[in-house]
Amino acid sequence: MHKIWPYLCFLVLVISCSSQEPEEENDETTLPNIVLLMGDDHGWDEVGYNGHPFVQTPVLDEMARTGMRFDRFYSAHPTCSPTRASFLTGRHPNRCGTFSPNWSMRPEEISIAHVLKNAGYRSAHFGKWHVGPVKKESPTSPGAMGFDEWLSHDNFFELDPVLSRNGEAPQQFEGESSELLIDEAIQFIEETQAGGQPFMVVVWFGSPHEPYSGLPEDLALYDQLPDTLNQDTVSLTSNETGQSTRRPLRDVLQERYAEITAMDRAIGEMRNYLEEQDLRNNTMLLYCGDNGTPASANRTGMTIRDQKGSLYEGGILVPGLIEWPAVISEPVVNKNIASTSDLLPTLTAIADQEMPDRPVDGVSLMPFLENPQLEREDPIFFWKFAAGNAFDDAPKPYIKPELQEGTTPLAKMMDGKYTRTFRNYVYPEVSPSDFGGERVVMTNRFKLVLDGMATDDLNVELYDLQNDRAERSNIAGEHPELVEEMREEMQAWQETVLNSLTGADY
Image 1: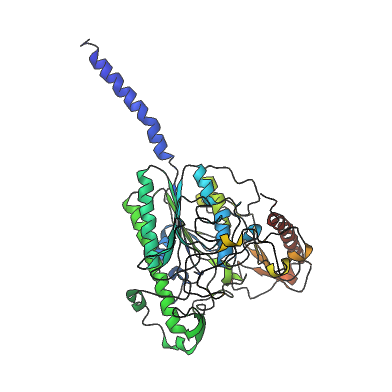
Image 2: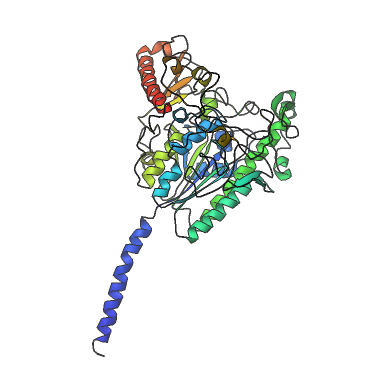
């Protein structure tokens, strides 16, 4: 027995080493963690790396230097609720009736949280929701949309926000809101890591949406804004009354920029945490805005046309940054168009899951992350649906009205109250009169802007965005064949969208 003991020990050692090999392979193929961050009303121009004359965003600037910077990243809509629906579903918001702010999505939609749950992820939402109430009874709450945890608000919020945890009664949290959300997200990550699951964290900041408020140290950073800015006044919500008021532009911008800098600092806290916990290499960290810069702030730094609410570049072009060292090993500027609708297809590919069996408007960005030189062939469609023409004075609610009542208070009064009421209506059948409204077909080079009815030739604009980013020169008359081709693409796409709106996808 003593003679064979060394051989037995050697055999045990070999078996032990062999049994560890699959573990090492599993480590190499571990599903990446996902952190998705989005600012509220944060347009393309309001970051240092895009040349803003005043705003200080050192963390976003560093991300732009070290990761992948999308110079043409778009929100799917020029306002918030619709963009958020696209972010969650990969679909244009008109497909689920989220036409404008305070319109909810529909309970049958499949979200990024549903997809990643099937892959074993644990997910959480923090901050602004705005695609339905966050209360637990709501069929479109974060929980109903697949998130395991949430600390969320029906709409926007300022310092010391009132938030609902997992749909329970709202409670007030003291502190700067962006920092609060990131601290909560980090706590969720720690709990999930302890359980051995990959995580997805979605943080939708309340900043820098008006009415604006900032910490003294952040306000002090902008004490030197030019006094000449106060020659103008802008309209925004009063923090005191919740009603509309007019204030000097300089004072408003000082508060707005303070919010942006505080949000930037909170993003830095998340990046530092991921680095300290050795999670950064295999975590995809994304930041974007939900629409362009609003009217209360677009007086400075604007090199693109128009503002929030418009389908010109100023309404839909937003910051777009991705860090993921395991995949994006070198700093790169990606020139392809991309949008919030691309997130679900991208995450589906990352998690090796099947795409939802329904029309999806986005495409996976994975090929462009792995090879930034690839050129996107798929266009992006935008459409401000004319809901006022499509529904009569007494439309049938898609969701019971009592389930559409929000609970989290906010500064802005609407309809005589400080909470939000959401809506979504049954769309029974496709009508030719519903193809109108402002709409856009965009490729990597050209952008066709249409307004009016689908057969109206009076409002057609074509821009070469590679050479005319400011959209000053309408070249539609020089390219009639291209205009007709893009119009036909738009018409065909609109037909699929209206078919989805009838509920046919469910």
